[in-house]
Length: 160
Image 1 (cartoon, one colour):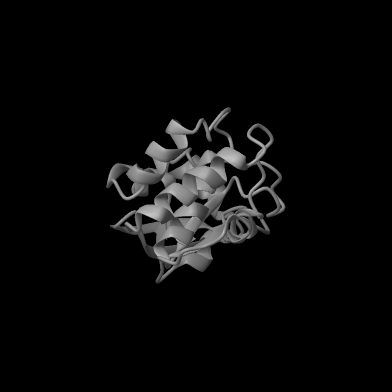
Image 2 (spheres, rainbow, N blue to C red; image 1 turned 120 degrees about the vertical axis):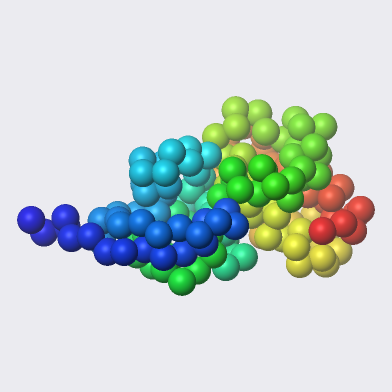
């Protein structure tokens, strides 16, 4: 049957080797959620617009709903679970909590990974530059002010 073909995926997922068969046309977000039970990667629009499915592939943000699982072979993928479990998101998470920047939480995983990518750059950025960087992530609860405040606070500390 068309679409049922499988491919072998060999990658690094959250710092650990991954070797698994996946449907050739399966999107990464579905693979993470359904096959690996990593449900922190959310599915919202499924068109790459909302950012809820954001993951890091080789250190750069990518949309899990637009990326085929087969495309991650030979790459390193980080999810919200991996970055949370190893503590790399701790400072951002603390600032999000302190500023109530994670109200319903639906956008939080994608927003945190996008913020993490920004913080890793180590640059001092203006509020408008922070807003520009997170503009691909939709949040219907916060109005973005608290999220920008949280990211700005981490950038001000200069820690990475």
